[in-house]
Each structure stands twice: as C-alpha cells, then as structure tokens.
Length: 535
Ligand code: NG1
Ligand code: ZN
Image 1 (spheres, rainbow, N blue to C red):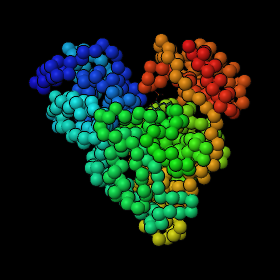
Image 2: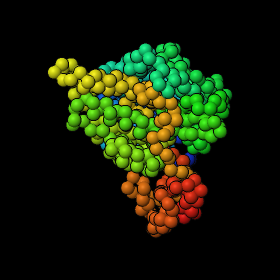
Image 3: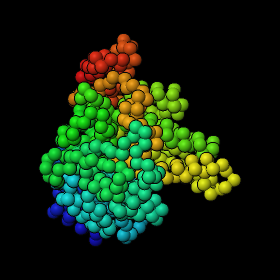
Image 4: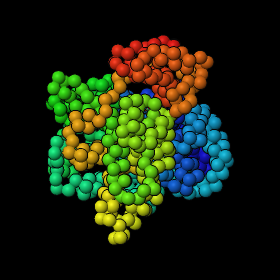
C-alpha cells in the first residue's frame, strides 16, 4: 500500500534523527537547515492531505526569510493564499515531531478526524524555494513527501514567497486572478503600473529612480525581469545581488537589518536624499529610507507605508461616490504610536490593532471593503472585498454616473491589479508606493513629513521559558505571570508619552520588549526597566 511507501521513505530517506521539538509558528517552521530533512518530507505529506481535504491546490514555500543563510524553514499556503489555518498548525507540529514509527498512525488520525475520503485524488501541491544553498535538497524532500501519498508536486523553483501565494490563488480561481506563471505575475503588475503612470515618468518633486537593496536573495534575482518590463517608467538601480551560496544573504543588508538596526545597508551607494528601499530574503517585506546631508538614516517603515497607501486609497474611494464602502487600517502593537495617532486623528480612518502574525492582520483586513494592513517591519498589503470590486466595475460601465466617479472606479480597479492581495509582497508594494509618490509629486522627505515617529526601542530578553508570559488585548496586556502588568503600568506612568509591552516571540526563543517615549533616552530607559522585570 502507499502507506508502506510512506514509512519506508521516512525511515530510509528522511529519518527523524534529532530530538529537538519543533513548533509551527507564525512563520511555519524555522531552524538550522540541517535539522529540517524529515520536517520537509512530512510537510509534503501534510500538504497532500490538506489538498485532499480542501479539494484545492495547496502551496509549500521553503524559506527562512530574513534569517541567516544556513537557516531554512517551511510554510504551508492555503487555497486562497492565506497562511495555513490555525487548527492545522497543531497537526503540522504533530507531523514534524512524531517518531518515524508513529508517522503512519498520525496520518491515519488526521484522515479520520477530517474524514478525508478521497485518498486516490491526484491533488496538486505547488512548491517554491528561496536562494539558500540548502533549498534544492529540501525541495526534494517535500516532493518525495507529496509523491509518497500519491499527490502531484509542481516545482516552481526559485520564487519569492508572494509569487508562490499568487500561483496558488491563480490555480484555485481558475486563473481569474491571473496566469499561474512567473511571466503572468510580472505582466499583471507591470501592465497595471504602466497604465496608471502614463507617459509622465517624473512629476513635481518625484523622480523615477529608486535604489534597491535585494538582500543578496531572491528579491534581487526577480527584480531583473521587472526592470526590463518597466523600462524607463521606473528605473530600479539594483544592489546586493551576490551569487547563490556567497553567504551574504541578508548579511548587513535587507529589510530586517535596516529596520532592526536602523542602519544603512552595505553595498548600496551612500547618496544623500536618494530614495532607497530594501527587501528581505524571500521578498515579502519592504522598507524605504534615505540618508540626509549629515549621513543620518531616515527610515520609512511599514507604518509609514500603511498611512501613505490608506490615505491615497481613501481619497479615491470617496471619489467613487459609492458611499457605503468601508476602509480600515490594521496594525499590531509594534506600530509607532505617532502613526496610530496620525491615522486616527488626521486621516480619520478607523484603526484596528491585532496580534503579531500576518494571518491575524489579513483576517481583520477582510472585514473592510478596503483593508490596508502592515506590520511595522514592512510586511503587508491591501485586500478588497468582492462587493467593492463588483460595485466599481458596475459604475465604470454605467454612463449615468458622473465621469469623475467612473474614473475613480477605473483608477482603483487598476490599483487592485497592481496589488498582490494574497500576502505582503515587496515588489508589488514597491510599485504601489512609487505610484502614490508619483501621483502626489512627492520626494521621500515630503512623505516623511506626514508625522514624526515617537522614539522607540525593541529588545530581546532570553528567559528559561518564554511561554510563562501570556497576553491579551492584541498582546498589549500581560495576563501572566501575576503582577507583571502592574509593574509595567507603574513604570510606564513615569514617562512622557510612554508605552510598553512584552510578549513571547512566535519565531525565536526570546521575549520581546517594546517601549516608546518622548525621547530616545527615555525609550531606551523604559525598555531596559521593563526588561528587568521580565528576567
Ligand atoms: P515574533 O518573533 O513573533 O515577534 C516576528 C516579527 C513579526 C513577524 C514574524 C514573522 C517583530 C517584532 N516580530 O515575529 O512581525 O514578521 O516575525 O512572521 O518584528
Ligand atoms: Zn520574509
């Protein structure tokens, strides 16, 4: 039977050699690549079962995003491009951790729990990988897992995480979302971009050139195709495109480095006031920044990107005249307090705060007709309801409405084509940001002038068991250990514009401490004081 194959494969090719317990977290599994053979094989198995259960195509992405090059990881992508459903995360964890001898039993348990009857269906699992040297080997392990349960693996090779999400959605929507190929992806984005931009490449203070840091990863490889398709409409000066295996992936460059260390990346020329952006190792995040005349870096992070986008979309949404359409912006507790204040009081757009992890943001964003969501680290996108899309399509066609309203609808529909609604996408986000800056005729300092960030500090604290800390209210309040929240409150109350919270990381074995206050010294001090309470 096929089960004998599953077990034989597991024992002979991908035996579980390590004791290390792994947990499927907000970013799937992450570890040293050498620990992951059996995990990949088992995620291949799980993906087939998930595909049979959902009667749809499932995705598997092999990447450790912004982590160092020797790491790797895996995430399962659900049919509509979302992250794997929460109830199956526990199954993924179980699959990864059972001993080889129990693997078949676990498969049978899952089949029984979800009553998966169609075990003969030759379901498709689409697989993508980043540029890590370990990724080809780990891809083979996933494919063998898929084959062991008689699924059909489709290997897309090296692609960005958002490209893989896009392929899954294209396949599951009968190509209504686009063609499930790389060419289809570039065509969709660049056609929309060029259509909106027209022939006016520069406008006011906006210049059509951006310095792009590819983090020596897939984001560099892929932008080459984009550059060609965009031509003169946007000149992307690409830096940090080392060959695979150079060891330089994310090293002193990339979105995570720039955001975490507020440090200008190596490999990008230090030109004062030039608009720069960095993506991360799987190109699902982006941040912008520039150096001023004194060589100080100014960071424009996910919060800034979100406000830029939300303000612009709101303006167009109002112009459509379809008054019942709602817009909302979703943040996490890591969003800078000044951004929340600006959105709420100046833009008058409702803001929701949810727990860390893109699935929570995405989920909340779906409750609006236009839902903008970004994590401060630059991961985010916009989602539109089908209702909004249909209403706008109707209005474009209906000549009884004023021309301005119909044009606003048309513009928004083009913007939707420019946006990867499935997940945060550095390349699509960049094109959207460039489109808005162009429309506003802004240089990067105009964008920055919208509001002033509160000084803040993010720290990591290593503790014996990070899970003794539990939180509520979108992670802003500690429930346990007893008394910790009171201590934080009392520290915070001594600071001007003070705010602080702690939570266990979902991706690292640490507790994160965040603090903001009126001055950098105060933010640092508050973070250090709160960290002391966590030890
Ligand atoms: P954790 O490790 O749970 O804080 C980090 C990021 C998230 C998100 C995930 C990856 C911070 C503070 N946290 O989560 O925003 O990007 O990694 O999915 O940046
Ligand atoms: Zn990433």
